[in-house]
Length: 383
Image 1: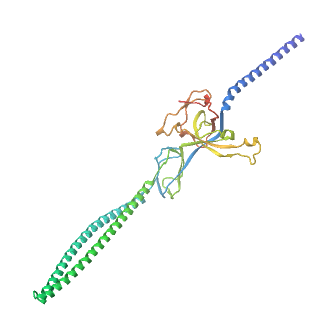
Image 2 (image 1 turned 180 degrees about the vertical axis):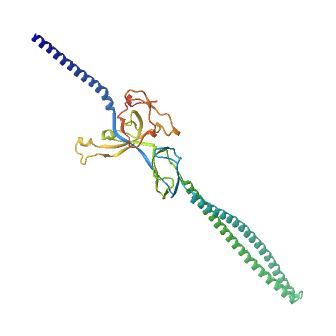
Image 3 (image 1 turned 180 degrees about the horizontal axis):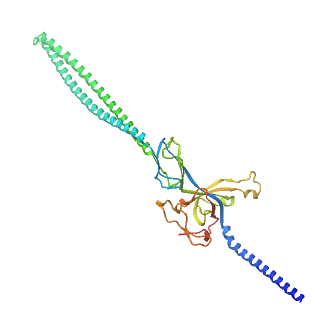
């Protein structure tokens, strides 16, 4: 009886041993098959860990003044040209009205100078006509004097007549000289009128520039977003008086988001600019985001102080930057259909998060192809 129990116990032990051996062999076979299936993918892809980086824009005012309106709040998505904040424009509007009045006065001075210029032109024309008349009278008087002198010798005129003709000739010469002086004075007055007109025009141009500058100041009291983005922080609040150049709020430009990661030397040397990249972010583990390489550092990082062996050389890492595809989606006012992406876990396809949902500092993994091998299914985009 005891021998039969021992025999049965031995049989059970051998069966358990064979079962354990079969399970081990099956596990090894499955591991081999999985390794064979994964090896081509791993060999064809380069990967690097990194984080998202967005452009940070510090919004400040060129002018100082009192904040009268805050049109956005922290975390809000804004569009390019959207109003962010307003300053009180009353001081600049008062200066603008003063400059506008000065501009009108300068323009009136230009009109007055134009009238004076025309008047002085007429005066010079009159002076020229008078000079011509006086010149004609002088010539006539000189000819009469010459005839009187000739007739006096023949007894045709009296000495008194000769004296009168001589006086008329001298008077004509004086009148001609006076007319010349009047013409010169009219020319000088015309030149002065021209100078006054140029001065009036310069004053009008200066006043117009002042009005334009003050109008720019008034426009700058309304601070707008230079690009689409997300408000990260707000410093100034309504009622506060801010200094010129003081930061008011921070804006993250979500239209230009880069993923910065690091690759070893053997992979960085193969990467070309504009090469396609696939991203997997920790915040969206079931989504694949498209990007393209925009920068590869020419200087290695994490390099040992002394590089002597091949093992040490393999520790060199190069910084790579990939720009996310802007077609992922924009703000609600400019939303586009985002591409449908495959779920690497076998779930249903969903849509990629738009750029507004991405935040600077999100970690993830970047994948690049080492050759022309197609993307594996778990990194492929479908539309």
